[in-house]
Length: 370
Image 1 (spheres, helix red, strand yellow):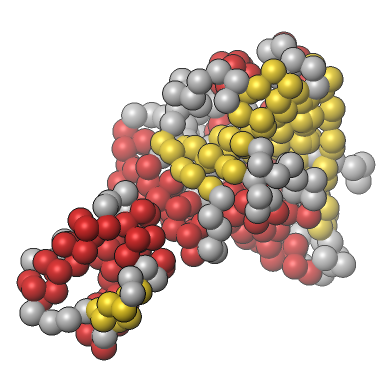
Image 2: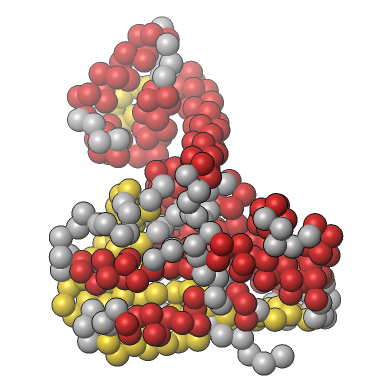
């Protein structure tokens, strides 16, 4: 009697407050939406709404239905994400950020490194920006909020991740982002479509980043620009120094390499971009450095971002015999110890921006000497 589409109707009506906006969000006509809502009420035998001048006001029954719908949709979204994880695993693809825990880690990462990476993520009003590999929308929220008059198209290969991103952006009330499922190696956009392309922590997970860069150059306008942000995990350093911690970090680098990625791609962004024909490449090294003077980053970055990433790959790295379980356990404990009093951790990122044929900028965070 009650279907998932009904739950989504109620959720969209709650978010938007009007029939017209809810219909637009769900890609329905307003009459089709009204018809489905009437059908639902007839099936239930109880009124869920009062309608006044296109505004929807929940009845007591409607509020109860809405609250339960939100819970069920949340569980349904998690189920979709887990099934997508299994599908990707079966196809032996290396794709980042599909589990619920990993989605949360990516959100923590985005928030913790905002000041390091996004202080200059600003584009002129009215420009069209393509965000590649938006995942669960962690970076999307930041750049969309910083550029309210810029129009974004955010793409990802995973429908499950995009659904999470859509919900995240809708919850924040941001209206300058459109989402689309797309493979960055074969985009449906016409040539010279976008003023700017934003790529953040994506190339490191791709077996053929050069192919993607060529495709992105194709859809850029002749004087368009592209920003590439990547890391260099192998250049991480920490105090107290610990051999097991270094082995755990290297296990993540090796595992990613075996999956077709490159966790150290930040150190080779310049030659990679230059070889694809981009010009005036500007590298901006940006290091995330954390010690006791930065208590928010101790939790946000050391515990919830970097160490959480190592914990997330531990089981796979051990199964692949890249590292033994005892060393991994000790390494994770040592990384967490850098969050204790007197510890410190630093990891490099790189930001680079460039024009399609004339200029390029990229951001790379390199480690400072200990």
